[in-house]
Image (cartoon, rainbow, N blue to C red):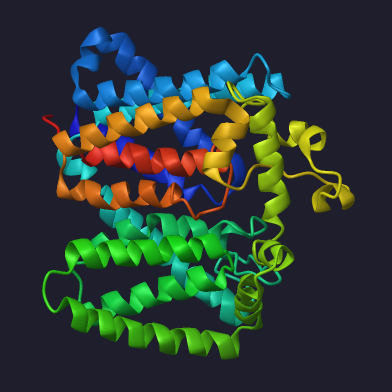
Length: 398
């Protein structure tokens, strides 16, 4: 294998992230990588599975595939469930290509390349906020900063927050003043995106970085950061009505009533109740992976606000409730087993460059994060990207 092929695979992997804001285009490099994965298996056969990275990949993927497969017999949208299961094979094959066909010196390119891309998205979004449209002409969505994601107005903040640990590491070597200006710019964009789960992910990343990477003058840095954060938040309060609205809505939780809590949570409580109803009726294998919306009407309460508005909850808005309602206890046990095996692998094969991808994966599964469906194309690509990055950066012998 030539070095050129190794770099090509790395750039192809990065292009998934580059194309992520442009609808289904991100699937194209994944498909090409999957074809390389088939080629690798055909050429190298079972010797591929001797690599620890391929072993853990196979375990995690098998658990994911099995949880979908077991939910299919009782699925309220069986065709969709089966499509999600079969199409997930692209992630497995693509990751095999990434792990086998790249060399360590080329894998190291990923962190600076991702950093550069996220910084570009950040600057692009700030230009959009102040000018009204970004560098490629996409206009600001009313009430949210959408940046390069255009009409997908709720994706900018969560994606930048998810990859923020990679950027934090990628910026370590540059001038400290420039580094913190760029980090503050990212923080501002995440806040202005209006997605509160992204805010929580961001806070977790900053805390994890402080805990793991700041070794000296820790509390002085913490106090300085707190002061800067207060100045930034006060400034945003005065210049951004949308930020004010998000804060005021969040404060409704303090009135102690269920209606206040539901208002603060953007009417999530009925969706969570319906999720629990689905799980109660289908505790073993759920209502089917990605079939939540088709089952919603049958399990919603009579006063469900989404039903009253003529709609349904599209997904559970919490990964744990999604696993329970759509794949049941079988899915949850498989997921716990996969996580346990992945943690064991990280401990045995840890490399410092794994840290940002590890934190990103933890971010996606924080207990207080309510974003996208695990089985949706968009969020599954994001989580896969971080997982493949984690395995790429683990200690390997070329």
